[in-house]
Image (cartoon, rainbow, N blue to C red):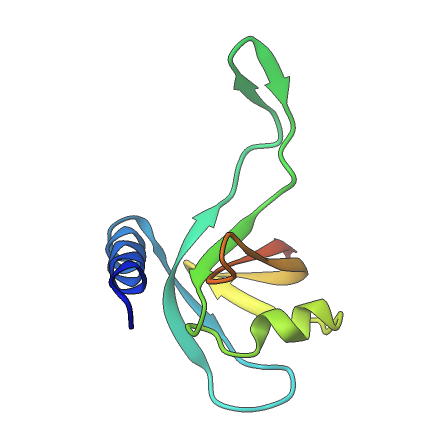
Length: 111
């Protein structure tokens, strides 16, 4: 692992541990329940950004690649995946890998 990858993994771990929420996922294809700390964004319907009103796209979670192996692929294949974040169940709507592909974002809706 090069220096940047090590620093990136350490920073992601620190941020998730400090500001993250407990999340679990059991693959719809079967397998063990996986758990990790994820960043979770659940904005209100209407927020003010500067002097403008802003409507968010809805809740989403962010995690470092490798924490939920296979989740992004299943979501991109339009499989209905259910994740539990902070004790609340959500259905997957869409997913993507951001930046260098190591930050995974899964867009959610209440289950």
